Structure formats: C-alpha cells, structure tokens
Amino acid sequence: MIRTGIGYDSHRFSGKKGLVLGGVFIPEAPGLEGHSDADVVIHALIDALLGAAGAGNIGRLFPDDDPRYKGIASSVLLEKTMEVLAPARVIQNIDVIILAEEPRIEPYSAAMQKKLAALCGIMPEQVSVKGKSNEGMGFVGRREGIASFVSVLIRGEEI
Image (cartoon, rainbow, N blue to C red; front, side):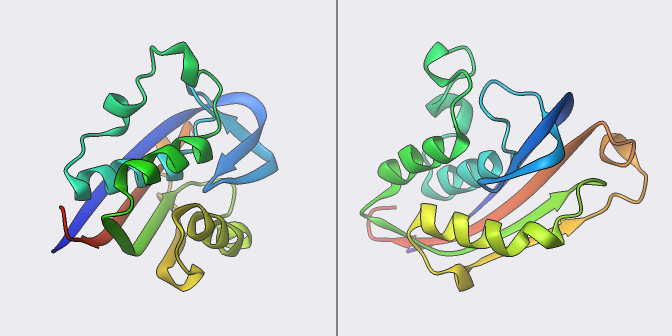
C-alpha cells in the first residue's frame, strides 16, 4: 500500500541568534520560539509521516506541555517517530518547502537534504529541500517567523 502525508509548521522569531532548520544549525540566523528547538522543517516532516501512517500528529506523540520535550532537539523527536513507523513502513520520498525571508535557504539545502535523509534512513536523492520567499506578504513576509510544508510518500504492508 502507498500513502501520502502533508505536514505544516510555523514558529515566530525569538530575538535570539541561532536557528535549526532541517536538523542543520545556522548560527548567524535569528532563532525561533518553541517548546523544543522549534525546527519547523522537522516538525512538519513528523506531521507528514504520522499523517501518512494514520498515526496522529506531533502534538499527540510529543505534547508541548510535557516537560520531557522542553528544549529537546527535533532530530530526537524524528528518531522517535521513525521507531513508530518502522519496520512496516518505508519512506519513498520527502519534499520540503521552507517559507522564509531570512535566512536564504539555498546555501543550506544540501546539508538539510543529507541530514533529513540520514535521520529517516533513506538516500539523499529521496529528499528535496527548497526555500521560498513570501514576497513580503503575511507573517513570513513581515519577517515575524518561518513556516514549512512537507509532503511524504510512504509504502508499507501494515498501513
């Protein structure tokens, strides 16, 4: 059986320096507010994977009122998500769009592609990471935060 999932996440800027996107640390970029490290890419990816598997959402699996997840690296949350999915489900494709006026995503997209592939146990060629400006519109355009959309394709016997 083949299933698709779509995930979305957004966070506002925190005023601190240092941003994590797609598991990659960008020290010169403004940071994001969140219960964990606020990695909008990984949060959207987790929701896409859980949606494709019919296994709920990130808030159900990792509630933001649970102190165990305060400040946790989103990559750890993704590893735990992969345990929920494996071994009966295999990721075929991950497609990421990051909406941000800053930082520019292109210089980091290859590193994010490799990091996400490694975390998900797939080849980098199965991951696409793209940055898009919001052309000055909305909260992204006003430089209030960053958002990400992720779509996934998974297959498995027990979906």
